[in-house]
Structures are given as structure tokens and as C-alpha cells.
Length: 206
Image 1 (cartoon, rainbow, N blue to C red):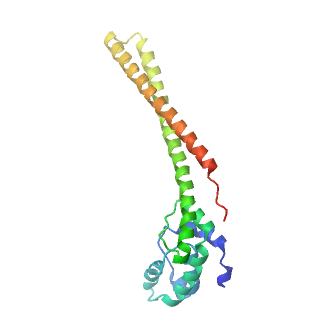
Image 2: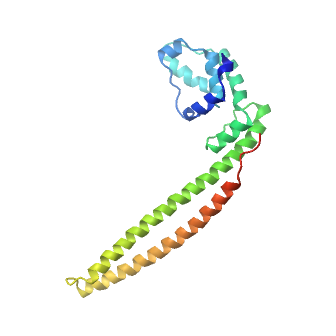
């Protein structure tokens, strides 16, 4: 039965790594602890994951089989600790907690770090995008303020004192727009550099 668990299940279930283990009474009563251990290992958990299952099943007075779980876990973990999974794990921004066996750790870490590099560059591109979009919104708001104040200046019911104040406001808004545009241009250049860097980062041949 263990052989039926493939890398497809890894991709499908990696999103659940950050959640707490929950098992219903039926799942605890009918648990195949060797299979559960295999799936947990295949999905990159550490052995401490059995503690989550123990807590979930304690409510029903059921204790996981440590021996069966560990047997399955060790088999699953060896299938998880491959270069391809390491790269994908790092690329997705997940944290590697050195759960791979000693004989697989160094190779896993090598490809994991390559995936992390891709993730970091991609995140930088997103962050620059957020900053650029924010600058654009601020510039648009300031430009609208300038138009409104220019309209008020030429209004018949504005006083000389108010007009003088509005001229000062407009001057400050334009200066702020200048600073925002300078920063936006710098961020656009930095983003372009990162995009070029990303284009050079290729998935490793494994």
C-alpha cells in the first residue's frame, strides 16, 4: 500500500504543513500508523509530528503506535529528501528544519538553498511592485489635490490670504511628487535588475 503514495501526494498536501494535526475519532480508531508515518515523512514533517496525532487521539483514549509510525515515517522521509523536492521546497519559501537523514542532508540542503535563492529574488520583485504601486497612488492623490487647490485659487470667493496659503501647499505637493517619482524610478530600476536576475536562475538539473 505504501508504494501507492507518490510525489503527487506531496504536491497536493504540502500546503498543510503549517497547520495543526487534527484527526477525528473515526480516523484515530482506524488509523494505519505506518501509512500515516509514511505520508508525514513524504510531506517533509519531522518526527515530532506524531505528537500532534497523539494529542488529537488522546481525546478518544487512543495512543499512536510509535514503532509503526517511525517505520513508515523513515521510509516516507527518504522519498521526500530528493533534490527535486528540495528545490521546490526552498522555492516555495518553506523552512527546512534539517529533518532529512544525515546521508541525504547535504544534497537536500544544496538544492534547497538554490530554491531559496529563487524565492528571495521573486519576493524582492513583488515587494518592489508593491512600493511602485503605492507611489503611483500617492502621486495621483497629490495631483488631484493640486488641481483642486488651483481651482480654488482662481475662485472669485477666495481671499488673498487663502490664495497665498494654497500656493504654498501646491509647492509642497509638487516637491513631494518629485521625491515620490525619484523613488519610484529607482525602485523600477531595482525591480528590472531583479527580473533579469530571476531570468538567469534556472531550475537545477537533477
